[in-house]
Length: 206
Image 1 (cartoon, helix red, strand yellow):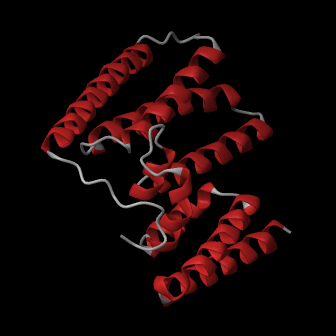
Image 2: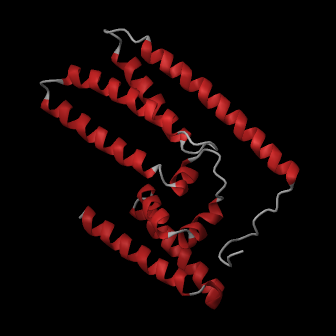
Image 3: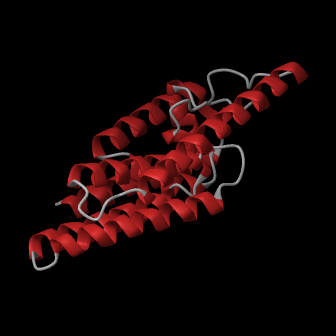
């Protein structure tokens, strides 16, 4: 176990693993059933459907895309289907907004934000952190960010604002002081890198 972590990784026996597999399977079945319901709703949308109904459906599809990234099995085809459905809905909304420059600009910004968010979800760490039942405990977040592969942490940083990142840095410094030489140079280098990232974010915000 890395010295930064507060407790050893639980050693699961075969029965525990079977239970995890069972729960994963149940979660997958519930997701697929819910997704089928959303697809049915999308197919049954009327040409003059109320705007709120369309927006609620889009929000549910986005939620399901996020959820799919935390499922045990690969969900590439379902994710593509969800993205395609969202795009169909967005095209309908764009047609309604045609001729309104402000609305068109807001829709373009929303589409770009969604693209970036879906891209972030390709990171297993981001998907883990966003999962409602994440296995990463609150006191494990900082150790994870200080020890996980750099490319994963780079993407995960988009989830935190300046205040949160500053708190992560403060906790990281305290951990480094407590553990001393046991943590090695890599953690110190990661802390320095995070400090640089925070400084850059603040400069860009100004």
